[in-house]
Length: 253
Ligand SMILES: O=C(O)CCC(=O)C(=O)O
Image: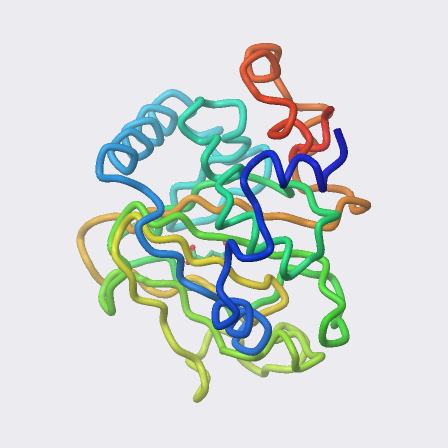
C-alpha cells in the first residue's frame, strides 16, 4: 500500500476540508478542528498520560525532549491504542496533506503539559532553516485535553508568519517577549489546533494552578528523518494491532 492509498483508506477525500479551511491553512498557517475528541476519549487520554507520567518518572519524555516547567511524554504511538486517533483521523490527515502534500509521515507523537506558573517558550519554527512560501517540510497538531484559555498558557502563534521566509529564533532579539502581531489560540478541550510548523509559535505561561495538557502529533515529508523513527521504536504489540494504512502513515509498512 502506498501513502496515497493509505490516506484514501483512512477516509481522506478532496472535500474532507472545505475551501475556506484550506485557504486558512494557506494564509494564516493554522486551523482549529472542532469536536475531534469525545469527553470519554479526552478522559481516557488524560488518564493514560497520568499513568505514564507516574510510571516513567524522571525518564518521562526522554526519547525526544525534557523541558523544565512541563510534563512531557514521547513515543505515544507505542503507549496505548487510544493514541491512534492522533495520527489516523481523516480531518487531521487532510490538513497535513494540504500543507505537505500526500507524501507525508508521522514525525513524532508527544504530550506536553504546561505546569502552573511555567510553560513559556520562545517563539520558534520547527525547522532548521527558513523556507520559501509553499515549500513546507513539517506541520504539527495539538490535541487539546484542557480548554485553552487566556489564563492557562494557550499556544501563541503569529498568523501568516510561515510565509515570512524568516525564523523567529534567527530574527527576534527576544523570542520570549510578546510580539505585537501574536495571538493565542483559545478553544475547548476536544479541539485540535493543526498548524504549519514553519509558523512562528510557542508555549505561553500557565497562570493557573492546574496543568494545561495537549498531545502533539507532528508530521514531516516522507523523505525526511523523523523525530521518532518508528522503524526503531515500533513494538510488536503495536505492529500487530495497527491497520496497514496506519502503518503506512508511520512509514513502517
Ligand atoms: O504546548 C504548546 O503550547 C506549544 C509547544 C511547542 O511549540 C513546543 O514544545 O515546541
